[in-house]
Length: 627
Image 1 (cartoon, rainbow, N blue to C red):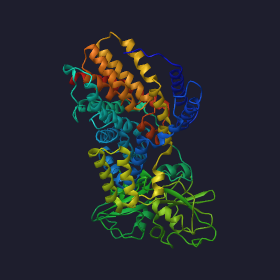
Image 2: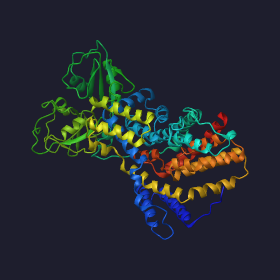
Image 3: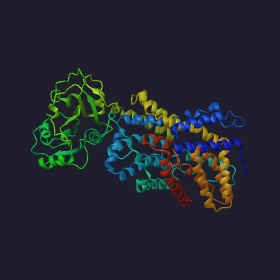
Image 4: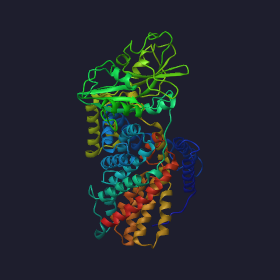
């Protein structure tokens, strides 16, 4: 191997790398802006004498149209389309059915599912599809999103090592091996790898990732929880407690057949026990805000809002069955579908002087009224420390009254167009699900998967086919598609691509690799393999994993031949190690989950540092066991 000398251009690239890491770790500016800043600096520096080949300014912004970035945009749109049909809510409900509200059970189910899916499709695609699922699970279990997204994202990356089509480096590996065989004697020719040749390594890595977060998650995962304000659609329990001191929650009860309350109305039970009946289910059909004059027919289930001790007293006194958690009503009262909001009665409203019973509030507006905030006073059916319970359904409305209601976001959207109300809550999902479009969404998702797995089309084109199909068939409209894209993620990745290209084209990557390999010269074969794995890990953090694989596989083959090792195993070591991308959010999956979970770079360093070491130990151990 001819020695490579450090040039002035390489030194500048090394300086830019150091500056990038400093910006990422210190976070003196937002990480996406830091990436844009580095891209601009790269373009400006290339205009200086002696640095002309640092970057081609005419292609500096080509990262925005790169295969990887366009693929991410498309898969975000596809994920939004599946979510729009309500399909992701059903997936979330299924996971919760088996995982419950326990972080220790939910994390393995989510992470294992994503790991399996990412073994057959690009890992960023699997992560993007599960992002809305995890978001729904987070709000329904009150587990912070930051404690769920990192395990999911890491296992999406790890799952890409289960098959030879799970990640771009493994897809390229067989081509690189065939190219390398042309320069090797017959006795040293390498066989190409089959689809599941790497499965033992990938399965071991996914299992390691799941166990890591299950055992050590409480210490290594941040508990970031974004707050809200009076204008935000909030979870019922948190909202009422913080704003009005109403310590309530939703409970599910069953009224058994033959119970004494059969024939009475919901209003009779409400007034007797000072609780709200906010939902009912009978013969498989549910009502979100049932009319309180409805007669009770048993057996039926009710969703009841009130203090725990009062609900327990009611169940014991009336002979109802109190369930441990929401079952039939779990989806209806999930914060992703409904929540507490505030509406004000404006001057001139036709409701002034009337009460909720007069206008049949629930039937007319599809919402349950929980409280009336009037001046400094809060009127509610549930007693507080300062106020006795009030039959708010019989209180005439006044101009300026603030009504606290429990509503679906769909019903609240309709209320925002009603002149009798001014909706104070504005930050809520103002959209309607389109369950009738689920077949179209699944069809175009399946078409994209088919194109990815069974054709040679570029990944971006395969995914855009599905995204465009969903827009054409009305699963999403074009504005929905634009809103589905995390543009900060797009610019973060697109702006880092020119830096990765500069690292490779300037010879900086080759120089770094040679310096490390010179240090390892004469070491045992296992240490050479470990050294290559570490180099591949470092390179994949600062340049594309494809670029790192293309650069390092030929070097790995040459080193293995010279040292008497197995060149195929050395090449596979490099291809797998380029998935060891957990330290900083330069990997597409890490960039994708960073914003929604509110992660900082230091969170990745803390959690990803241990995962990086575990990846190296487990992958090298299993590779040598199966070789």
